[in-house]
Image (cartoon, rainbow, N blue to C red; front, side, top):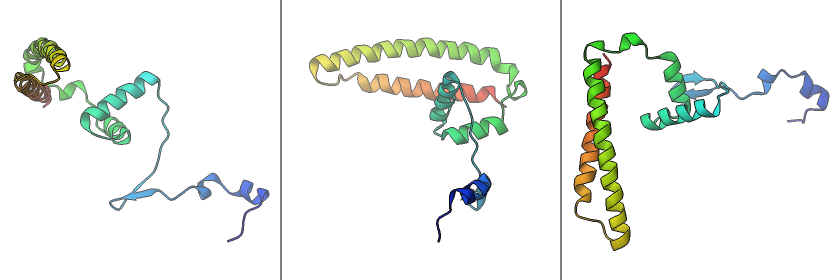
Length: 138
């Protein structure tokens, strides 16, 4: 294979020197560059992290499957909002309990017995919040 000189490099179209699109499960994929503000990127990263997805997958899914007002079940929306506010208060109390248990653990160099109860409460609350959020959608 011979090396290209400067004039040959300039005459080659950019699309000719790019790599072929990646193939994923037999489906051809191409890349796209997107410019985001710092806050837009932070929101996208948070959404991707919450779903356990890559930034690319999150962006593509959001663009192709946008959430609209039609997707929200308005019949039980007020009830769900009330429940979510209640869970937010409960989580704030559990966060306070976790902080106290953490201070105890640092001072005594051991975990208190109550930590399993608090962690179980947090896990149950997160599950219930996820259920409530899912119930808002049809």
